[in-house]
Length: 349
Image 1 (cartoon, helix red, strand yellow):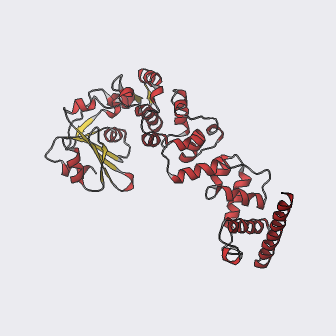
Image 2: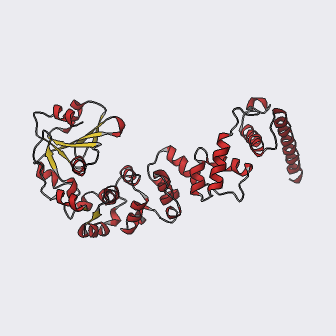
Image 3: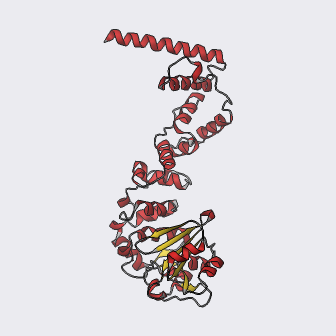
């Protein structure tokens, strides 16, 4: 990334800024490169690859690379020190020339890196961009740093602003938080304005990122611009109920309600290891072929076909039937019972 950026901007003033410098100084892998230059759009287009405006308001452009890596080109209008004064935290307000040379560090960010302290560049950082409230906690969480006293005071003072940024930006920060990070959000007064709670999260053992989001926000997660896949995942977890007894039938019903996330759902519902083991065993023993297909039932297209096939699958899982003939007999009995029930309903009316 760096060599390509140097080739693109070899005759122009350009600086590596922000997280790239920070992570390099910390000995962390540099995944995202942030370059301040005079013509961000032109630099991004010359760099090559998928290019799009990152911020029309601020004039920043992003190049998306493989493996989740990105190169951001941001405008350098009034010199590098003026640019750094607009940054969020001192550890992100260090710059070094793209071509190499001495770093510029007007806010003593390198000293804060050594002290493992997260300190705001100015008192207005959270008013300028309320997303920085979440970023403060995320950086504490990822880097194992701690907010300095004054910056923590500012976070608490501006906590009510936390829900103002666009949902996409909020979600991008939340998904990177560990359970410890969510605890810190709550401690600083940032979680309640977002509609979150730690009650469910505290019952779970080592949940993954998506599970943490569901646990913290529950049904309110739908207010954020989550993917359809995450919506389905959340729905499966939230409707999961641990069966009173682990039997082949109860395992089948649990899986039918929650697959392909039945194991996560069992953990979310605190159902215990017995159900988790039963789910894995049932998955391994899933039949390769169904006993019956929908076109063998002699029924008109509609939801009744799905209901009947589900009945056959459940009874097969429960062990009451095992052959095609037994499945057909079950279907005939179910149809007769349904017909009788319909006639009885008609008589009663």
